[in-house]
Length: 435
Image (cartoon, rainbow, N blue to C red; front, side, top):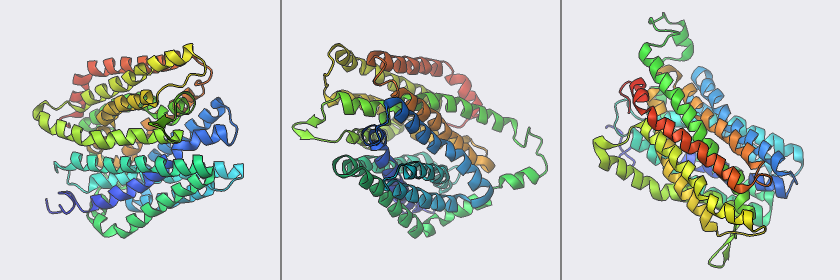
């Protein structure tokens, strides 16, 4: 354990923690009010706004697979993150201009930049540790706290500026956040050097393709193909999970804006602040989950089991919303307590903490080393599919009965969780001993 300078972890983890914190500040700060901006300021109807929201957020995550390939074949992880961050900042500042064409150009730049940054910063986190280093999962959990710290602060500041002062000032605020992340990243390059060197020593895809065949199919052994198959299962389960969870920025964002009282103990708050609630619960619950996994020891649930629990909890959160949805359906114009949505997000976080940091970590362990960037991109592609579904669901918030909308989402996720529990053992066999 030669490098243990930051809470027992490599010093480079602090650099990546704060870099990702500011990047997520910019992303979630803008995401918190994006669909609200489209329906209130641009006058888009729910279906149009939901479609654009879904295309944008799906594009952000789908671009990650291209960003992983670009890093693997050409730029390398460090430069991909740096260039991606610059493009993201330019995108947010472009959104600060009023003419509509700048809106679409800005969103497109953020999609490109996030595609370069997101999978590769996670790849560098994994490279901070030797393959056998038992600190890896804990390191990803700390890194995940940085993500959620940014996701908590971003909506509070950028969302408030957008809804209470000026929409475009909120966009500019997000750009400032990304700029701070870039400064942090550039200043911390020396701390990342061991990870950069470790990534440079791995075989590149081009070199692997030119090398003599090792006897496996398309260059991969039977064990590697089994692990890839396990990753495919996790991809499908994660896509279903994100399709429900990511509605926090689409249908549930509109639900909070239109159907809840935006006031707690006399304090009024902008509806975009709801997006911070999930991050608050992650910050509170993540240490408890980390303690629980350690406490359980050899009885800790395996990764496939955690995925099944994640789907169960996100489905349960939508069934929980059936109670206020039924009241709203029976009393037009009724606004319910904000604690219904807050409670929904609490249940969802029990699920997210069972899937998101766990999935990111297991993908870095299961992926064949020469295509780890591309496979991390595949992990984020699951989020892309989920975001597209979440944007589609937002189009029904004002047309379909709320109990029907929430009931369908809940039933699909609970059903998927039952399937996931049923296939735990075969998926564990595919993983070949990787936990």
